[in-house]
Length: 338
Image (cartoon, rainbow, N blue to C red; front, top):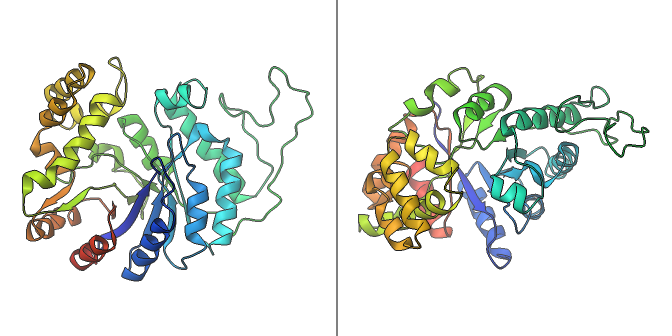
């Protein structure tokens, strides 16, 4: 089994631009031997601009989006940004894609949230056509018809090839997927998977979905790491995150994070967390997150305990741990893993 790699997960910005802090973290991660650095987007900053800024000030670390939201840009626009960033960085770009959720897609982008699995397949196909540059790009699918000949069309569109020759036709494409059908498709059409709430102790949850993935397929979960001699205190940030996502990131009718927790063996607890959150009892919702679940998907506790638990991740399909922390944290984790 290949040695476990580390990636720096910078995520998306909060209320303010992080300024030079993210650049300095990426430079330190590169110096320490981290394999990759990732940026995200939600409904604030985009993911490509910060990645380009970081790429201009690093030289070897791979650059990934985790994730670029499908609804934020058309597939061809996404491919244009990808080929440009790959060229400017000397072939370091990785495109991580995700459908996001209906609250964001319909509330922020003003688009219908329908058939996410089909939409993802269509999107990836077009991006790969652009990057391959073998022929003018066409698509007769439901979501991204090229050329467009629907309502309002002038009927003058024609298939086009990118003017710019991509540095690489095989820029790695990753997909952030949660549902079983989407994960199965990810193993079929993508080069890597960006899982949420992965547990090396419950590999059976996704074993069937990824068993036919091609050789070299990468599995890169974002993992919260909190080194603290007080295990309860170390687990609290993980439980707070889970309480918010499982309780509040969705509706009572549909919450993908809650459904994932249920598939991982905690259906009753997931229901309770959501109920408490909807009642405005956020502290109680966080407290209802089982310590066992939080502990499985994260690396928490005293340093020796974290170092021992890393072995469990090494003995799993995971290829990289995507982590976030300050420079001291990055150095400490590099000593344990790299």
